[in-house]
Amino acid sequence: MHKNRDAALNRLKRLEGQVRGIAKMIEDDRYCVDVLTQIAAARAALKGVEKLVIDDHAAHCIEDALASGDPQDQRAKFTELLDLLDKARG
Image 1 (cartoon, one colour):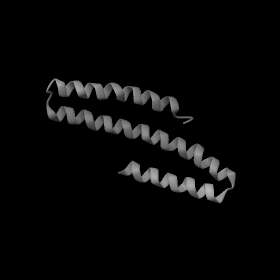
Image 2: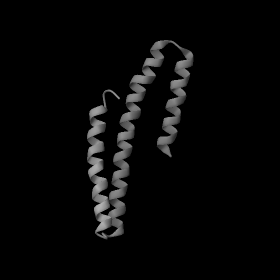
Image 3: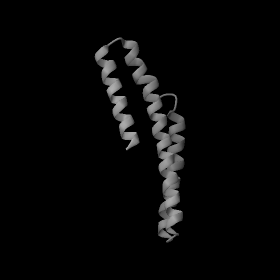
Image 4: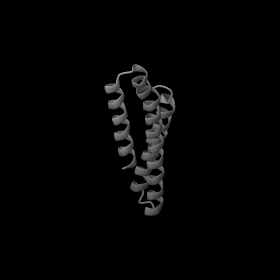
């Protein structure tokens, strides 16, 4: 990762605390809807990190493949990006 490295790490550190908070909520037998709300927020935060990593992949790995002029490498990186986006949707 390049440009978004620090932002992704900061988000993951916050997310780590959020997940610990969810575990504590479950230990404390908190109301299910409150727990599920926090789980949804954690999932959204993780999606944000995923977007940062995909953005960096597109900005660096794919850009490098395009600049290389190597059609095989370009095709491989493009296919890789499509696979990543498919996994991100799932």
